[in-house]
Length: 276
Image (cartoon, rainbow, N blue to C red; front, side, top):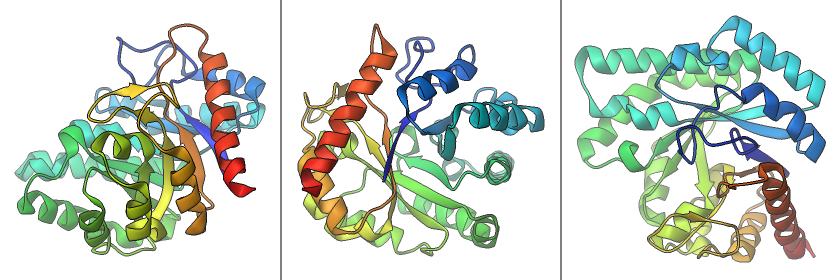
């Protein structure tokens, strides 16, 4: 288990958003992470200017590799907010084909950079709201199975489904190419029982987002919302979870590095407390 952070958490917000690709500051986060001793970053992709993102260009990926080497920072996962902002399974015809082309381009770029997990958020604008949407999602993704396994990639869904429904949903996808990201804060906001969730589909969890939210509400500093971190980590460990914990925590208005360092320490303490 290693603790990493969501790209953008070590710099100022972009247009007041809690999460967006930090165009002006993305290179600065690498040395900042090294100073904190954080070894992992989860990349972010937005649909706006998608193909200009450094991840999506050969020169950009080379710069990412250079910065990663210089700062001992690895990128093993990416959050595809682009897939939530413009979900291919909610449109048809040429629009769907164009978005599926974007998805394949993201997978190719991720594989080239050595990323292992590509997160497809099925929440908010990307939430599945009908059987037709779910069928379109499956039809669009299952043909990518060989592409994913050949590249050592997994698509990991983040979903707002209740435990039993999510367990049934993920079983429709082969385990060697598809899995889940478990978001602690989102589950707390929905009022789900972490013990029930992880018992239902814990064997399919490949990535974990660490954040806190109030019931029915927004993201808040760790420990001030409804997330039950000791229970979450106890359940994850009982399932043998050995993946990453990515800090997708509340944004700080002042010292971003200090806030992230504090959240990292809190997360590690919860994890190690359960370990003992």
